[in-house]
Image (tube, rainbow, N blue to C red; front, side, top):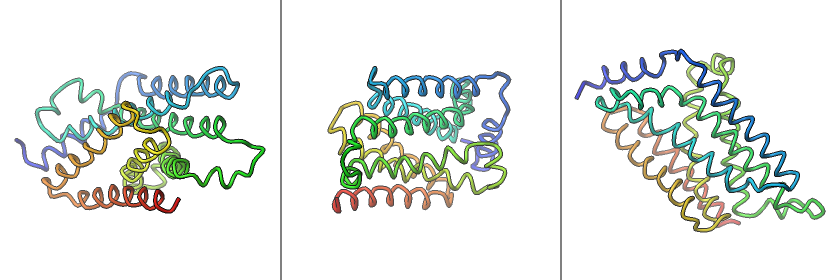
Length: 231
């Protein structure tokens, strides 16, 4: 296996190399258009989007997290499909955030009674967990544009690590609000297993990010537990 520095340089070169197609723009545009259409239809009471939006967002989130991190391994980095998917992590991540926001908006619309006091309705465990996770995704969406990232400099990458704080919250939300649905368990549980794998990979590289990664996952898990106990 190649040394860590050469692996990192190769991985960064792969991820930064500009694409020759309009695929990233098409991915974002198609997801925004579809999410917008389904949101309108859902608000009109014609379709149900709550569960599909959560599953679509989760699948896109997996597509964002997994390939780029697997590129740490030289053999996988040489795979054409893995490299191509890794270059799409930004549009996939933006699309995932869009679907999570749609999920939150539609859930509030469908399950809240505006004729009653909103405070007690929002103070339910599953809702609070989902709102906190959604706020993290909104923050990441707001800092995904080129202008925002140039303004933040290297700090935008640190900010986007908060995804590992949001994942335990999203998993807890799925369990509390939706019950033990097999798709939710499989998707979010798989991401949490991958989070452990990610920590192990970072630690083996001797990267300082391993501690940050562990702290974020632990903080998200602790916050979920506290919200569950308090509410």
